[in-house]
Image (cartoon, rainbow over all chains, first blue to last red; front, side, top):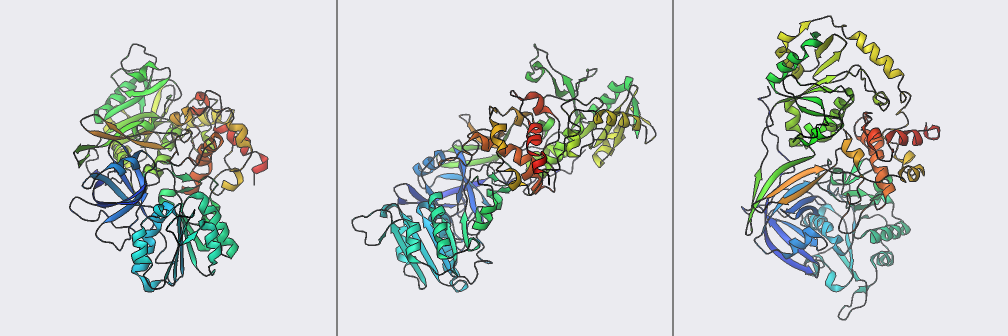
Length: 281
Length: 353
């Protein structure tokens, strides 16, 4: 009756990803380098987009892609150990094959709203993972953006993700100011001590910048308030939301908030867009 | 339009069954049967057998969404050998089948599900079944006190479907509405005869008169729809409405339009099967993540289900509601809470604009 039926491509069926490098960043964060078995990048993406990684038999979970799209060789994922799937990922060794599918979600408007702007990146803890993709994208296309400020804080020096890249690459770049802070005094640390929201207020940025916030919900809440005190409008501030996801394509219903699905309408939202969502994220 | 004498209904069904696997509403309560469904009270869809008695009940206990979006469904398998992994696409083209006697509300539910599963990226599992299913709908003759399909603009007297049927005391009238339907009707030429296009009008009139008299005939959906999040989200009535809800998820499982699902892995020892199964937004672990959940209390979860059906879904789908008024949740909820009560409470005068 319907012999012309052709099985469509299925978004939920992943491809194989091989872990070719594992970097220990902090006591609970590792960065995994993933390629397809023939050594290529699994798919192209834009800064801010996510991918579903899974370990068959353990589960599947959504992670932001830490590496920049300008890296054409591989993808990186900075992952904090905090649940079933991430525990398993942290135990595996180089050469392990996992599954990967994506890219999912929207992206930071790096080529539109961000073009020509002074950028202010504010991250807390593992919140650097999604921002690293944007920061490195901006560094790659340096002439498309104005001044770049990065404020990054964590509980302690040992909890700063990707410290080496920050020291050797970001801090040595012209026109990029990196401001690091840790929560408590520590021997051998001569940088700033204090919470990110307060540090941002102390630094007192000019309000013509576009700000991108990423970190624990409590940090986002207070930093946003701080930015508003400095005179930033919500339209200038971007952040990402994170909710439980299963399908990644707006069908399974998990990440539904109001009429939006974080997996496809997010994870990147402007703070004034978030205000329009019901308070359930 | 064509017709077939009711006395020849078995021949009509036999002719349908020749073209594809035919499923018909059947009465359950056969305690000795090996088929779990048939042990339940109430009607369910079963494969038609020659001479089988069709259920006379208004509708099946569970909705026919199973045929396109099964309660559990295997999606793919994995084999792990040491660090190496293989992925197997286990999808196969589905066999053709016919669903006979689907009521107007349930036919509309397929449109509601289509909007979710057939929009890009297409869900191939659903698309596969949908492409191979032909829907023969049946106009209602005796709508029940729990019916409110009219609230959502559904005409129980004139359903959608590939082939639409009406029954009176003597005849069953059939007309094709789609290309798929035309094909099926061509195969039924020998058991049906030509009749006037208005032959079923008397049945339609009768059904409409009955629909006018239903207890929920006055229920209106006007107060709801896209863009009404702010109107209803913070209404204190949610506390009272959700207070008695057990969070059992029965409403979700009998609902023809609920489509939330979970994806899980099952390790058989030889391979890992990745399957999906129905889930419910009313369950406390539905949105649970490693760092917590965004809907920690039951009021929020209760509100999510109704807001999705009455506001969020219409907002994304051109005003179409994700409720078809089939009434299953009205008769199945253990504490008698349901969407009608929610609509009456929230959509009262205070919110009418």
